[in-house]
Length: 164
Image (cartoon, rainbow, N blue to C red; front, side):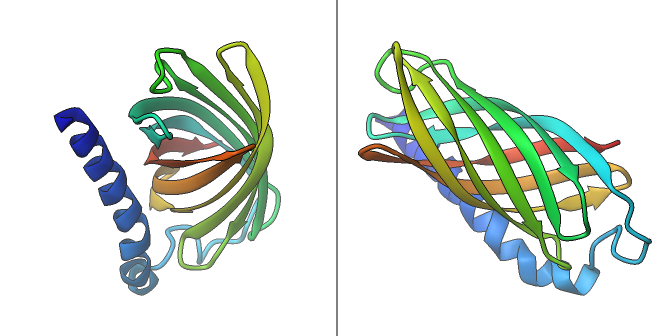
């Protein structure tokens, strides 16, 4: 019970953080906004939680994005839940499209597959993140909703990435 309350609190905090920092970021601006844009890769790790119909569980992932234009990037995500709340592990594999704004806010849409307890289901993702830039490094609070056949899972956490 305490673990569920703590995990739900962590997910809620990460969610609020992602949206609360956007107005403050507008004043500070994006670290790369005054530079000429060059296409590049961004790769990193994700640490967060996934709230399923069973419970809220830790989630770990790898992310890659090719930022083709100032606004549009395409990428892939692999997320792993050691326990999806029902005693079985789950792996989520997604292709994503990212829309970047001038204030660091990023909107995410994706589609892929969820592999869980011998089943394979289609999954759709809608999410948002805020990218803090420290040189070529990004720290990004992120929230998303994953839509599976009859379920919706809430995902929240932080991505730590590097621009290449």
